[in-house]
Length: 434
Image 1 (cartoon, helix red, strand yellow):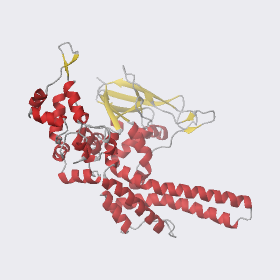
Image 2: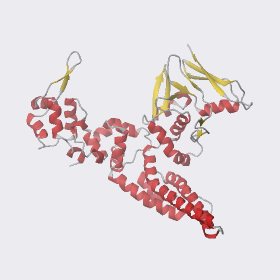
Image 3: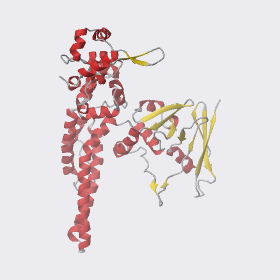
Image 4: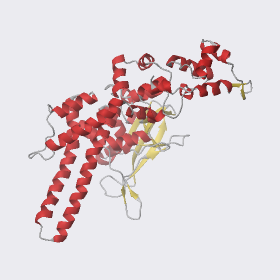
């Protein structure tokens, strides 16, 4: 029996039935235990069947688990033992949610084949950027629980192990190859195997591996330079420093090799299309974060792109009838972890700006920021850096932006000109348009 069903907890069913709560007219909850017969009537079965579940003689199927949970006003997973949840894979967590594969297919609106590839192999459909959010919502689990379940899929574990072997093989074959760096051949057997493992085109895999192996190549070159110093420099002190540097670079090289399988797995699981990635970059550069700044959606991209952004990466909300967005904690982590891989796939797109550098005395040195609030609101809004660049570099001051039918923003530079070399302080004013 599948673990998701084997972990059905008869004691939990008994406790929920006998401790069932109802609410009186004043909204006050009170204990109103259900008899086995009453619960049976709610789910359309017999008293003996309920008692068989509670005594551990029978295990309900996913549909019955969902019916029992609905009758008891709880989520299906409350009927499961907690001990093995960390070991559940996608199929287990689906069954424990009281759903069949057909239920999920219908809820997600995808083909059975696509869902089967996801549940059995952890392969996310290419043209579904919100797929993991949709799955988490359908199963009633958090993103963290869903990611853990994917990691527990046997095929995913095998894929990461095989990716490690293929990566080392590619590194041995290409990193030290003399001549101009071109990366692995597109018809290389390792590239083709990685393409099959992740369900992505060979061209895409080759671009990613060209970047990742290129980083290893740079480390290898530095080790070779230090090796020359260690072998031939007449100064013993410089030789010792060179040997120490070689050890450090070897350690970094091994760490990078070990990091690649996890990096590829996470990227192919959550990668966004190019236009959505640009929105993530803009939000990152604007410094948006939970309980922090927001950016008006019209300054980020088209409505179609914004509709595709997963809620796990971007929060979107309307203020005074004006839509705005900000990065979630997962969104900020996504940008930091995968920016180099996105750059390898989309070299022509704007890359995230480096974090503000630390100045003497501990203060942070950053560029001027255009920040403001809306009338009657406390939330802080900012202008994306690339819009501010247009103002600072091209001297467009003031610049008017209509971010919604009922709101126009005018912003410019106070107290200095773009060419004066003095401090530039963006100023922002908002105007409600009747």
